[in-house]
Image (cartoon, rainbow, N blue to C red; front, side, top):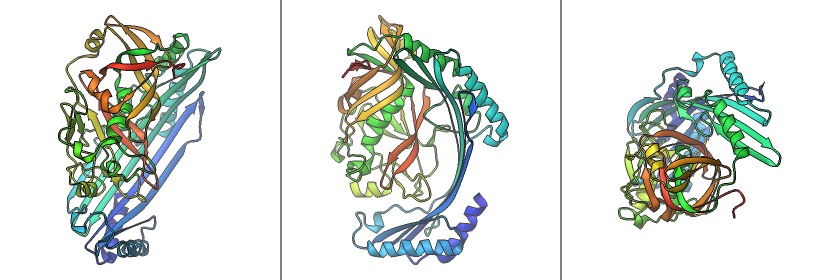
Length: 480
């Protein structure tokens, strides 16, 4: 794939338009998906896509074009279309051409990997899934069960008129397990084994995600939920496990801090933000225990990279330090518009989309207490694990989230299982009630984050320890 991208880049250099700046982003992606449901192999699928995205800035305007035709003629046609749009938008840009993101960087990045996807034959991968499927069917009350495994390889090459040449190769692994239990009028679902979030790396990531070893536990917990009482209603302490912290970080820190959203770009589609530009540097977003970093350098996390899709070098920075809001998630163009420092997070989901402000690896930094310490410190509360449902308002402030699995905490001891645990809050105050932060980072992620028009669905990494919040409204499935 890289040879094709390099040849296409050389071809484009010969037909590049006269411009103040141009860039060409080439992408080649291969995705292989397997799944076994109720011990039956579903049709395997393999998808291959290759294309180019051209950006041209000239005479004060910027234009884009995309093409899957990587021949010299196809690239020349895309360049001409981008140049036409640049001329049409001259004088109407929100950002002066001199302030737009430009790259002259040269570099390479590849996902660290111990065991490539192709080291395991297709038959062996299917056998792994069949074993996992059988391990999920532990009881007649398990009425549906599924094991899946997805491997994805993505190569990108960014070149520019300023001399940029950035080659990045990414390897993703996305496994998962699901068990559906049913008895009487009750149905409960439990997932695990890496479900709902990919990681970067090879097949060695499966053991870290407890795949497929988690299958019996996933099934037994689904059955336990059938026997469990409803989560009680009240205001209490809430212990969120890292899998649910992923959703909490994503919705009530990640999206509110996207700078293009703060500037109003997403208001008619995905909403705005309760955060305003004047908050940075002094606004208390959370308690003094809250430290949040943008860190695309974490190997294994889903959105690790060396450069964003505009060619800006990625580095670890604090978005929130000791509870105080420091900087937004804004790429080069948004930084210029807002006059605020940001991050290298202009990202595109594929070759036919422009880079926009997106989350990457967004992490809550570890604290001092083990999970046992956190539980011991709670007199009355609820532990919640694994997101099941989410709802949040257009300004990413008021939210209500539901989880698959809950357990009561009584007098510092983990108590019985409860089903349908839910909680609600307001982002602007929820994080200020952060009462304890555990040790270590557990890596999760989101592989279906949607944003932009036309829509872009992208992968995002989140890592977090377990965390305790005080004075949270919790309720069961019958709550309102």
